Image 1 (spheres, helix red, strand yellow):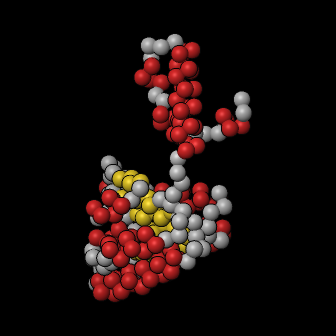
Image 2 (cartoon, one colour; image 1 turned 135 degrees about the vertical axis):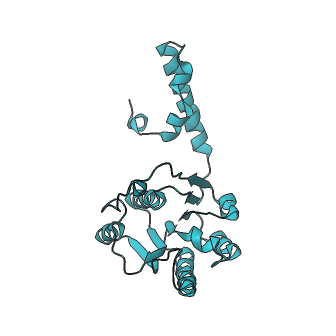
Image 3 (cartoon, helix red, strand yellow; image 1 turned 90 degrees about the vertical axis):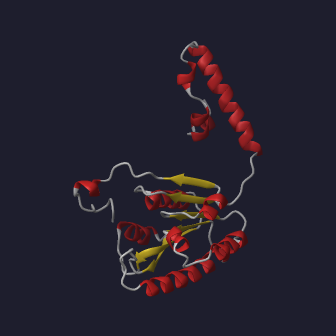
Length: 219
């Protein structure tokens, strides 16, 4: 077996479901699996490469966590990466910030810990505008292959930034650059524009049982 055959291939795993072939012999199942694998590889050869817009939204826990996983995967592959967080306070020192400093990965905190009970919404709006100016510079600089815009959905939802302006900048980004956007309440225009949209559903959360935020899990 070659090294290529040993590599994990998520697309192949999704394409072939052995449970659908329970009536077939082992030989026939293997034959179908190999055929599915080969077809996927042929399509992959002709598939175009493009810079993706990836959206993690929904009310469930894990949107930023998933984006961080993607950020570190890209970094591990030698891509130039950066993360900008709209809501988290600039004085925060959470686990991802500590890890990023050790790995010399750029994470920029742009907010002031905004909540829906904020006593100074105008200040939060201004910080969002200032943060977006930094984002624009990063996106258009040509210095990055993947940028995460964490919690950006909120500033679009509340009208602090106009979608038309954000859309224009995303359209002007360097060819091949990936953008990852996270947060609840994604506006329809963003959902339509994104190449990949994942909705994380809140089925159960330990907060509801009175369990406080855990070090290494929430912060």
